[in-house]
Amino acid sequence: MHFPVTVYENVSREQFIRDIHPKREPALLKRLNVGDCSFKWTCDYICDKAENVDVKVHVCPGPRMDFITKNFAYKTIKFHELLKRVSNKIHESKDYFISPGEFYYLRSLSFDNRGREVADVRKQFPALAEDIIFPNFFDEKDLFSSVLRVGSPGVQLWTHYDVMDNLLIQVVGRKRMVLFSPADALNMYLTGDKSQVLDIDNPDVEKYPKFLMAKRYECVMEPGDVLFIPALWFHNALALDFGIAVNVFWKNLEEKHYDKSDVYGNKDPIPATRALQAVNNGRKQLDNLPREYKDFYIRRMIAMLETELDK
Image (cartoon, rainbow, N blue to C red; front, top):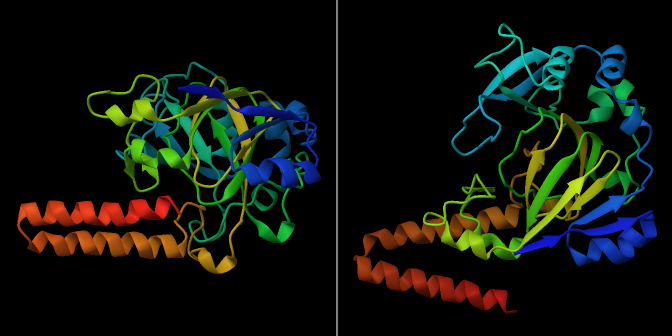
């Protein structure tokens, strides 16, 4: 089942807060003022303006990246060199880590205390940040992170969910976004926050039969478009061109519910983590019983949880 993502134009803060955010559905927002980035950010402009810092990138021999099997390697490269490689479809034979024609994907990290601080494009790329305006749909105090994303044409990222609301600002190139509702979690074959279904367009129906039941929302983003992705919505990104984007995440739950060690915004809220741990501990306890008892009490646990969905 394929459905288009709802499109809105010239959305104001009041309209977003009143009409869009409460629906808890993705929304493609067009004709917003996101600054000069969508026409200024050419490779030459960025290389002239942004510092040539070391960045850590995903490098994969093929276009489809899978975080579960880790079919990519992390490599460090100069930012300007990365832009040169991702903006050219053909790499020179000497310009590769794994294989000629390899694919690259950058999710910017904090340069200081890497791995311990959240990404902030305004700190890591201050000269570029002057060109971008974040939509004022949330309070500044709730801002969690702003992430610069750079990818080769054809790169497709694994389907996953985040635990915070976010806005994806497409700056350079086109990107296809496919999203699935949290209500389809049982059809997504999850490992943690990621789906095991790597090829969402031609899934292995024998291995993942329930995936065909998931309701699929889809849109193509153009430069300057902004996509609202509510927390817990599964999303899959396919770069139709060389692409640059900025993700802005903000906290929509009480501060106490978030894991303070979470620098990526993808750790489950603390109450959810505790509940999942309790379920896992209960499952392990049932290993002490014969198979027919274990099956019976697992079904009882499922029935107990299902009653919560109806409340």
